[in-house]
Image 1 (spheres, rainbow, N blue to C red):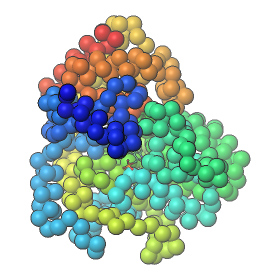
Image 2 (tube, rainbow, N blue to C red; image 1 turned 90 degrees about the vertical axis):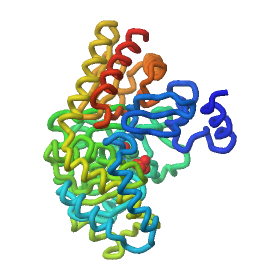
Image 3 (cartoon, protein in one colour; image 1 turned 90 degrees about the horizontal axis):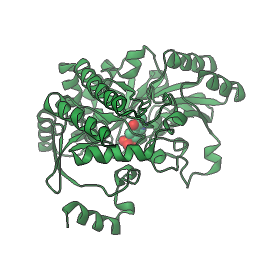
Image 4 (tube, rainbow, N blue to C red; image 1 turned 135 degrees about the horizontal axis):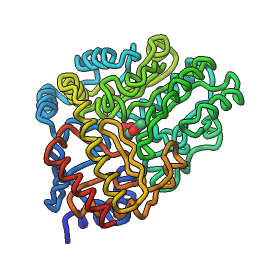
Length: 425
Ligand SMILES: *Cc1c(COP(=O)(O)O)cnc(C)c1O
């Protein structure tokens, strides 16, 4: 029996669904997941010794490819000095200086151990600041799995067909207003219907968790204006897009200043991390300065921050964004050409090192249009690529990620494979 199959059999007995995060279970494409025993650059090596070109990049963090020597060395050096101290450590100051310099809307920042904690804490802080209860989120945006945010959420929740999780009290859900993305009129109407009650508007400035969906020109500026006019805190959840689409995130590209920003993924260099920050006036309401409580035993963990600092410094040194965008365009063009030749309608939203393939004739601009994507065709495409050595996210509603390590033979081979997979669909 293949090693992956026997590991999954053992896992199924003890771990719900065999996995520690639902999308990994391959339910949306059918079949069972493979196990990875090592990863280097753009390549995963499975427990059965297959080599795969990886477009999941650990769901975003691995922008330098897997196991980058500089990040590995930074973790090793930190490890020599101990794994956790329960006191402040020097990396925390260095990371705060780095983040506030690279993302200027963040005047003060606090580290967490996951993106979920960052968004959950930002929401609590916005409620504490405005003394209001309601929040606005957008269908298809995923902000981690805390109660008020797991409503019409993207990512695994969307993949598995239950964007509204069981276990969330209706009284909590009532405090979350869910709106369609890319629709400023809907947001204006929500403010009008809930006067003086909306504490915060949270969004992924370009959605990465319902597949990749770009904000249309002018939309984010309209959201910013409406939040300002109505005294609501604007929270950009850049856990995925931060440091990926530009060194200063989507807010830099679009010249928008959010009140709070959530970060994660890349800032941990592959270790568990999150962060939230923004206007000092709001951040200073956090304990111990203010009444909004937030804490974490491993927050600011020295290993995670050493990895994250190395990752951010590499981005600053290399400024790889133009190169990554060229790789993204190369893949997008290959998929579009193959689909055109085959006569299959397809949408391939792409920006920099993020893209998605939606099998639909409908332009994808929100969650509903993303859901018109043909899941059966996607599963064929997914397995067509996997069989030929390219690993895509195992769901039609996830973004694909490219790393600097993909440059060269890996990207060329991936384009061939995606073309063949579409021809054979
Ligand atoms: C991944 C993600 C999160 C959650 O981060 P975790 O570290 O998985 O808790 C939140 N928001 C966005 C936009 C994400 O992509």
